[in-house]
Structures are given as structure tokens and as C-alpha cells.
Length: 336
Image (cartoon, rainbow, N blue to C red; front, side, top):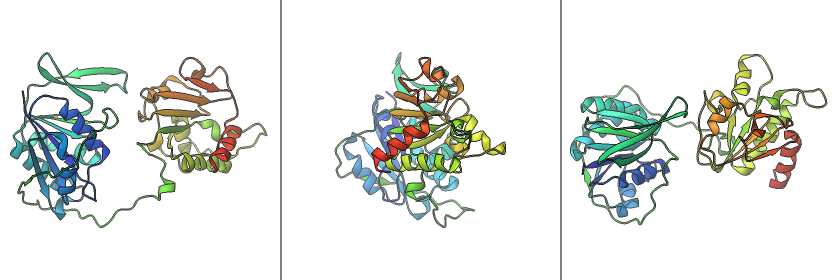
């Protein structure tokens, strides 16, 4: 049985976020002794949060220099933790922070790294990693002989670890803070009611280009479309997605939804979310768009065309109706 290391960075309050707890659950599914390596301004709260996970050691690199995401400091901390743990397999959540730093750490240690993994397991006595290729159209199971083997696990693929807290004995790993050329002077984030991308939301609301087209009265109702969609997102705390045809309108000089960007794009050339439920509005359900719904458990759609792609086995429920009228009524029911 090979030893394993879980790498996690702490949140500003010192705790571990959901992606780290998901990676912990994946690490516990593999045999072998588990060491937890923590990076952040402080590690005590995070270590105590998962004290009951069964890890044999808790290592930490802490300090003001390691509180903020930065390649140089994150790479130095991860390298020090990997050397101190001596683990053959290193698991980490695929956050932007680790996705940026760990490939370089793998090179420094003479190991290998695999990104966007969806699961880890033991097959025929060797550890394997599952991931998707070609926009989630092909699934592959990989194994490597090189060690250390670093694996970045995508969020939403494994139930987050949930167990008793306690008091963990944390070993501090000394690492000299490298010379940096960047300084974090603050964080600018949108207001909560302006946030449109919510990965942890239970519902994904997807808007299609039909919202910006002429309606039954022959006019375009862009401002009303924005009001209806934003009102629903605020009331339901849903996440917003968009079809490629809609997000591309901004480059074609046509009416657009001002809050919609390519970051919201769902589909073959966009993102592939993992929300429990999805509601598509004014989308025709073409295959490239539906590819992005592969992991959405319950699919519903609103479209005036009863013969659109959603009606051909791609949606659990299709409402043949005007999305404007439906969302007006829904927002009234939600008190929006």
C-alpha cells in the first residue's frame, strides 16, 4: 500500500472549503496511510475540522506569505510538504490555486501530474484515475508508474467528507518564503445579488438567444428579459448559464444580456456543470449545448417549439410555452 498526501489550502477564516473536503473523501477511499498537508495563514482550525478523518499526520506551512494565492509561495509550500510527507500519491482539489501551482511542483519533484480527475480507485492492485476527454464525450482510466503522482480532483464528483471535529496535532514544516514579485493588496468581488455563477447552487438556469429576439408583438424586450432572469436568480439563488449562440451575440452587434459573458457558456465549447437540477429557457436543445448538461440530474426546458431538441429525449420535462410569461409567473410566486 502506497502512502498518500492530501494537499489543501485554507480559507481566510482558517477552515477548509467543500472542494478540499471532497478531495479528502477521495483520498480516504484509497488504501494506505494518509497525511494531510495544509497551506494558509493558519492551519489549526482546518486541522481540527478534519481531526476525525483518520490521518496519521497533519503537516502545515503557515504564515502571512502563504495566506494569499501566489504561484511562488504556493509552489514552495507544496514542495516542502511533499518532501516532508514522502508520499507516493498526492491528491488535491482542482482549485485555481492548486491547478496553477502543482504542475510545477510535480516537475520539481521529478513526478507526474494529472488534472481534471473525477475519481480515484484501486484496480488490479494499482491506483487509477478517471477523467473525461473531448468535452466529456470519452472517459479514460489512467495509471502511472512515476512517483510522486499528483492528482487534481474536479469539484462535484465525490460527496464531501463529513465527520467529527477534534483537536489535531499539527507539525509545522519550515519553508523559507521565496522572493516574490507580486503583492496582494485586496480583493474585489461582486455583490452577492450580482453573482451569476454559483457552482454550489442546486439549480442551473440557462438562457438561450431567444430572450434577445423579437417576441410575439414584433419587438425586442431586452430590459424585461434582464429583469426577469436576474429576478429569478436572486430569488432562487440559482446559477446562470448561457448557450453559445447567446454569448456570441456580443460580438455580432446584436442585442445582448449585459450580465452574460463567455464565462457563463454551457456546452461543448463551454463548461460542464454538475447541478442537481437544470432549467433551459429559449434554447433549442442542440447537441453541442446539451453536452454541457451531461451531469445535470434533472432537466427541464421551456420552449415555444414543441419539436425542438429538448423534446427528443434530452429533457425530462418540456414546457411548450412563452418563457417570458412563465418566468413572470414564477417570479411572482417566488416573491421577486
